[in-house]
Image (cartoon, rainbow, N blue to C red; front, top):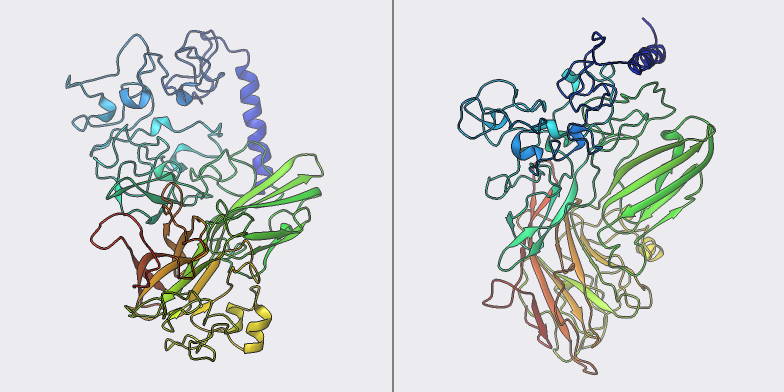
Length: 570
């Protein structure tokens, strides 16, 4: 059996010969091979009448606008999108309607069989809405390297309202660039979403992003799907980049490396405050003139005045990525090869802590001191001992006074606060020693549970996010999140809730910022307090943590943020 390299070289020569033969084709020349343009014509058809055989010009250009048919949203130039008229490539005739019911055959549930109405390759489905896979972009793939039988259908549906069609399913069903448009949701909720054709979700390189529910009144609507990896042009890199079910269907492809996709053991999950090695030779083995690494993402990096992570050795063969917050980060490695070409890989690194993790960030964090608090399970008392003293939080809540490695709070009667102890065991040092207070945790000998990794008090922490962790919560426990601002200056905090390493909710991110959130300037009281949400934890059979999160509103209201001034109530 010939080697894979030899087979690819042979296929490349065959394809090149076919293209060369096609160069001098005239439309009365006998057919030499099937039309590669998928426009329904044989090899020598000239559907658009421009004297260039359809196969020679790729997809054909029925309306002469320079866009190949399958890349043209209105290929017949009649002002109606192909997806709305079953792709009528002939401007002189309407799409076929065999039974005269006004519905094109491609989309008519009463007409059996493949679409013959518009030569657009669409397949009629037995259950509306109808499939319109004809509108998948052309990637220039070679039939011999990726036969039609191996390709994963895009699964795009005809133009529709996803909410009205009961298709609120985290997918862009009609391939219009929006996921779950007009679908109701709870403001602040977060869900996975996919930015590509629905049939390509989870195929090859493709990976989900996330979208947030934005308030539009009592209910909300899903915002843009961000992050993740959508289909891209196929490359010679050992990965199915266009997520169509075939890998490296590029003529002459002999890859010098292999890019990772979802689940690849070379790209495991990371953890906050832990170095994450990026080793170029894990992915590229050829000769290289230079290397470059970039990282983007993180749920707070559009808010914080500085990045929440570092990348050391970004211009070297190997680098170190060090996150301080949870979330999905997009890593890109670019190699300038000895041949002068580039080899590029992009993948997602999921950074997650255990149990329940609350992260709070704000753009004023270099100049203002906000504080994050979490109540003990089931606690419903006041947040503060004295309404006039911002340095006397309740003992039953976790915060700067009793949850760091060093206890800094002082009780009204004198002496330090007792460390927050909610009946959990301690956690291994690996869970906290990589943070900025690592030496203090190592001196303590363990990670407390719950704990605050760092207090952004403009002394030990400046410009960073605060986080509170409960590494091993129990089934059915209820916690309440609160953010305090006693400085007198306006601030725009955002709170992210993670359960079992998965982002569940985000509150306070534009355009849903907390309005008028400022302490009372010059006052000695506790200032502004934002009661964010109640979190109830659940533990599944495998020990993984999930959560129910309920946002808090002013008493008697069903919308808005529960913010008070110099009011210590729970």
